[in-house]
Length: 136
Image (cartoon, rainbow, N blue to C red):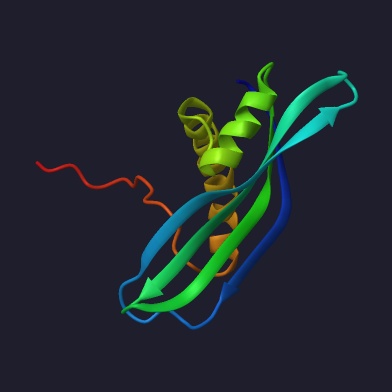
């Protein structure tokens, strides 16, 4: 099932306190809703997958910052009714679609959160490579 669209509806970031000591970041992608949509341009049924992604910064078990993104993925498939039934029954997507959706959410949101974390003077939400001196 190809995912053909990524739409952000809400972005928020808040730094609660200044960083004191070590910081850990928990990233979470959650599918919130699945519903049938009509893509008028192509006269085709699609699935709208509502999601929420968050990066929560903690220090010494205290939340010090949080960045949240909410939006929708648009997926096209011939079996939209089967996918909707699966969602209604299990409150989850079929495995292949779930993996594809989560990977797109992670890639798109983490890229955007990198910029927001920098503006809030927070460390990046994922580890970045860095250059080091060669050992002689």
